[in-house]
Amino acid sequence: MKIGIIGAGMIGATAARIFAQVGHQVAISNSRGPASLSSLVQEAGSEVSAATIDEAASFGEVVLLAIPLKAYASLPAASLNGKIVIDAMNYYAERDGEIDLSNHASSELVAQHLPGSRVVKAFNTIYFKNLATQGKPTEPAETRLAIFISGDDVEAKAIVASLIDQIGFTAIDMGNLREGSRQQEPGSPIYAQSLTATQARQFLTAAQARDFLDRQ
Image (cartoon, rainbow, N blue to C red; front, side, top):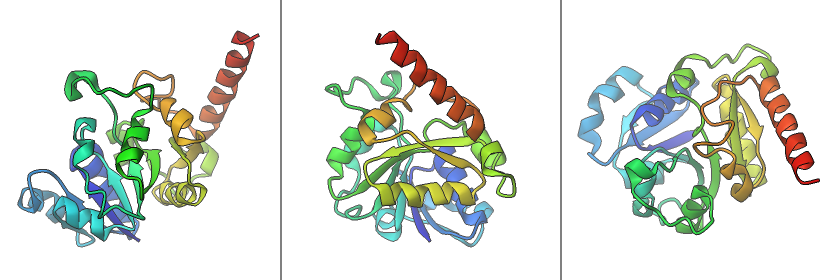
């Protein structure tokens, strides 16, 4: 599969390496231009190439967004039209400034900016070092670390879940983009937690039970 990556920080660069390791072609980009990515590309191997942001968006059948949320409005909507877009971004007010979410999840703002894209929230809760080192494709799905996903497009989520499986993690579906991605945002109980798939399912079941009791 062809995967575009916009953002070459800790998550973007790590994702480029591990997707390439399982045989995907990757075009990675950042705001500084392809020349700034030469050392990453050389280290990551022949399946990874440097690109402009628009080139990475056009290249990928799936495109991973790993830039500061404050820059989401600069994403090339036309080039991402029809693409599966993985939103790995998080909102940190101290970095991004004040963004008026208007009671929306941050991924909903991204989806509004990219109305022709199939947005799936994923890869935003996992520590980049765990992403780099803890993928275990040969282990049973339930003992692998969980990566949480959410979205409104069932087929798009299935494709993202398959990519997660290929790199040795297990996708845990949190539901639709609005409610599911809210549960993945910084400050949520699952954010930055290292949970196996079994632990994640148990945690979510217990959380749902507590929520039910709180409403009684």
